[in-house]
Amino acid sequence: SQELEQSPQSLIVQEGKNLTINCTSSKTLYGLYWYKQKYGEGLIFLMMLQKGGEEKSHEKITAKLDEKKQQSSLHITASQPSHAGIYLCGAEDTGRRALTFGSGTRLQVQP
Amino acid sequence: DGGITQSPKYLFRKEGQNVTLSCEQNLNHDAMYWYRQDPGQGLRLIYYSQIVNDFQKGDIAEGYSVSREKKESFPLTVTSAQKNPTAFYLCASSQSGRTETQYFGPGTRLLVL
Image (cartoon, rainbow over all chains, first blue to last red; front, side, top):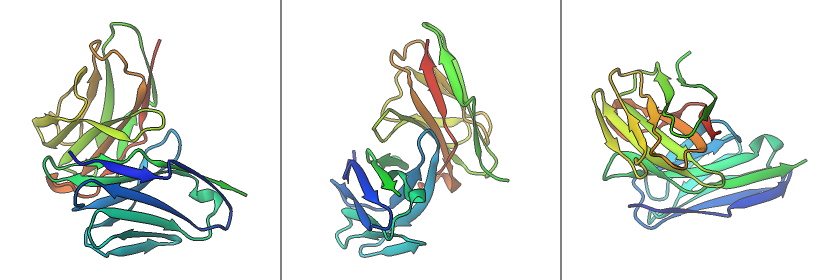
């Protein structure tokens, strides 16, 4: 089965700083999803990437999928306290039409 | 408003007791999923259903059971065979039975008394 490794596991940044979260797969990624979770709540969909080299942005968050389709990164520009939470990457498991998730990156933004 | 609802928000289970977590969606999605999340960990797939009256085991199905009698409902029962049920349970749904974007409910936290 597909395994996703996220790094770092946790991150503390000062407000206004940029940061990057990585998601690495042991297999080729055919669909890579980024979600955000506030503690004790459900997941909020951020972005989905499918093509090698693809890049998508929403407000101050940019997600990229590398050309080999085995690594994705999530970049936040000028972080704000509202960006705090857990970021999870999920990948399509082509064998069973479900998602496999990484263990998440916990982000804290200090004012 | 369209969305996914889960109830209750908190649930307490006694030893040897079965408990059922509710998941309802009004998005007209074909596929529904149940995940378990433990502290500091990602989501692990328990069961999933691509269409009504059909469902498949995920990675950690032992001690759990589901039913899919209606398109909008996918209840999860945590049986007494599940020896470590304390966790956060998340339900999700997606369109057309494909692994398209999954939308999640707010979750149910299960605690053992």
